[in-house]
Image: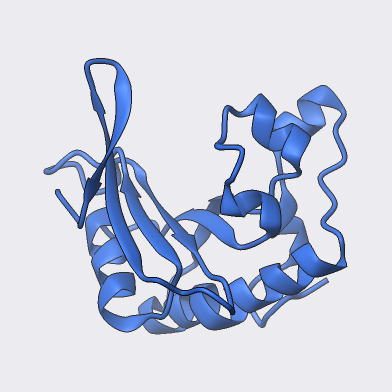
Length: 154
């Protein structure tokens, strides 16, 4: 099932964790509607701009799947509103900056990016038709703990 021209339900719900633990990672109607909005409003325009495939590392995560991967209990992934993405050949910091400069979004997090290593980390982006607050963060490890810094900090 295509959600947009270049994004399918299968790639937005694919989860090695769900397969490994035999968990159902099928979105309900509201979560599916949110996935469509995310793909139409953010992911497809990114794909159209860069002219390259967008790799979805993690899209929708059922609450059980989310718990198994150690995700936040309030994660937008569980609502079908978020994806962790990369574009081969595009630095993740550049991808995050493009989204910040050109898109409407709820949250962008440049996660675990290492300056000088363009394909390090990934970009978390979420979209909520009712609350696109444009929060921008950088996730990094400090003393073994994940710390979220405001803005894009390469």
